[in-house]
Image 1: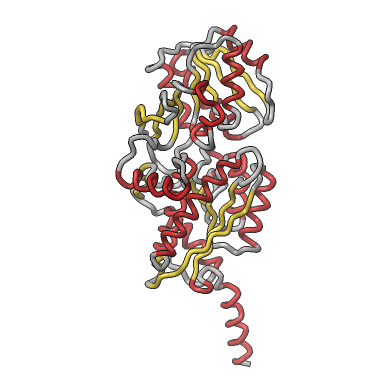
Image 2 (image 1 turned 90 degrees about the horizontal axis):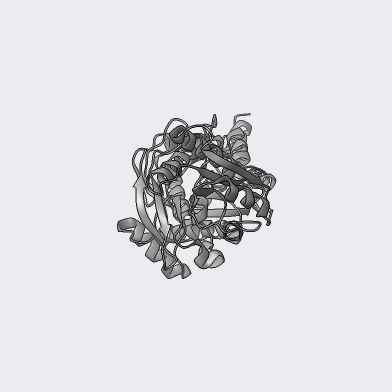
Length: 385
C-alpha cells in the first residue's frame, strides 16, 4: 500500500513539475502576428527572441541556485479579442507555461487578462494602457503607464505648449484603448478650459477608411488641435483626410503612434506632429542605447516602443521568476511568481524605472516626442507622475 501511495505521489509530482521540466522555464507570448497590427506582434517577437538568445547564450537564467534555459511559446491572437482569449487559454492549459507576456493592445489584453486571472497565471501586458486590464486582477500586471495619466499629459501639453483652447477628438468607439483614452483626454482638457472646450468628439468604427464627415465637423468646430489616439496603420488615413479638408493646425497622438511602420505609411504628412509615448530612441543613452544598437544590428531597424516595452516586461517577468520560491509544482509556482511581481521595487527598465502599485500598475514617466524633419521620433520632454 505504501508503495502504491508513493508511486501515486511521484506521478502527481511529475505532472505538476512543468515549470522547471527539462531544466527550462517556459513563458507564453500572446501577440498579434497577423490581423490589423502585425508589426506590433513582430516587434514583440523580435525583442523576445533577442532576449532569449542573450540569456541562453550565457548558459541560461539563474533560478534556485542553478542555470536553466528559457523557452518562449508564441501564440498569434490575430489582433482580435476572441483570439486573444483562445491564445491565453491554450498557453495556460495546453502549453502549460509558467507565465504570459502580452497581449499588447488593450482590446485583446482586457479579455485575456480575465482568463489569466481566472486560471491564476501571472500575466504582464507590456503596452496595454487601459485601466481595466489589471483592475481587480491580482495575477495581471502591465509594463506601461495608464491612460488616466496619459490623457492629462496630452491635454496639458496641448494647452501649455501648443496654446490650444479648443480641442477636437477622433477615435474608434469600438476599441477599448482609443475609447478610454479619448474620454480621459476630454475630461482633462475640459477640467483645464471648462465644459464644452472639447468642441468636437467624433467617432468611427474599426476598419472604417472614410473620415470626411468627421473632419467636416472638426474643421467647422473651430478646434485648435485634434487628438487622435489611434494605431499606426490608421493614422495616415486620418491625417490625409484632415489635410484634404484644409486642416493645417496641430494633430496630437498617443503611444499607439510609436509602434509599427508609422513613417513608412505616413511619410512627410506626419512630420512635425507630437505624440505621447514610452521612450524616445533618438538620443538614447546607457542601457537604452545598448538595446537599440543591438536590435538595429540584429533586425536592421530601430526598435519601436512595443519592442522596448516587451524587452522590459519579459525581463521583469524573468526577474520575478528568479525572486520567487519555486517548488516545481506549476500551480504553486504561478502563485509564487505573482507574489514576486507585486514586490518589484525600482526595476531598471530601458523605458524607465518601475515600481508596482498594489493594482499591478507601474509608477513611471511618459515621454512626449516630435516627429522631426528626418522622420525620427525626437525627444521633446518627459512628464512624470
